[in-house]
Length: 63
Image (cartoon, rainbow, N blue to C red; front, side, top):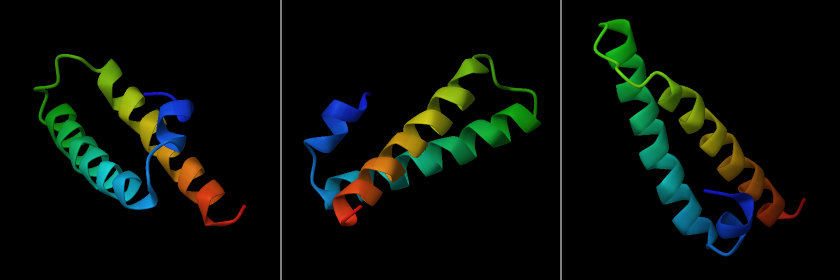
């Protein structure tokens, strides 16, 4: 997911995507804490995707 794709979405779509990514981040953190996480690189990818969405939302709000 890149910023160009995100800028084409509406604010509501971005908020929905943000909610799902935050849920996924929570599940990955729990899997990591219990030692069940096989693909540890996913944690960083999800964090960066969340940051990208938050940045685009801030831009759309009038930044």
